[in-house]
Length: 308
Image (cartoon, rainbow, N blue to C red):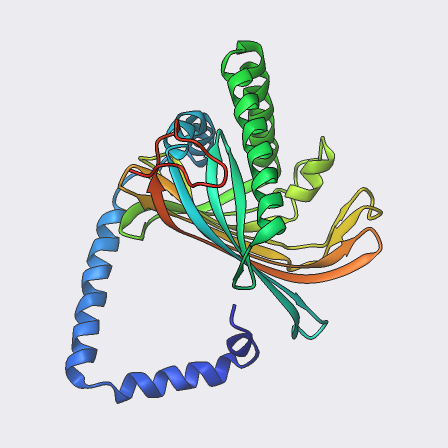
């Protein structure tokens, strides 16, 4: 949320009211007509039946393996912005990085291109290319081993199912509804920690402190937007390893590329806490863009894969 708007909500609301009444009548009338159309479209959506949310989330989990085959066909650009702030929220330092991103299985491999607007050069670029190639080859080998070993595949699926089961057990899902997101009909619902469930694992206690809203493309079986925040502070390792303060939050969005697959487009994280003995108050913003398909057989390294 914009700091100015957060600190002066009533002032901002007053400005919006003044601007609205200053608009030409034709624009206001057009906006009202649009709102009426939106209301009609929403009423039509509201008439459609809603799926069972836990079942929908399990279907999403099962669908991830099929999506991997589509994701790996794409490469994109990633801009990463990291701010360190003081206790009043003022930015103390800012770091910006640009990457090429490739997908292998369910993981992203990033190749650093520039820092704070300055492209890597010389030994720094060579070191990054070497690191990237090593990481890329490791993940490719890992993915090949997984694809050729049914037992490892089954174990990974069990681990994924266990993580999903932890989330379903620790959360309550309420207010399911149909909405539009980036021109696509989606299912939206709220989630909050289920205080009636006794945590079976350490992760359960952490998940129970998480609340937010999720938007899902029912047809594609994919999460397209997620907003979440910690309603309470979280301690990891009894607070010795790390802790997050109440209110730490994040947003994640995807966009549909070539009308065939949803891929990340935006992520924003705000957290205050401590890692070991270091107190941190940081903001992260990631923006993915310029998605292109490439032929997986092309050579990697200092040159970019051949794009279609």
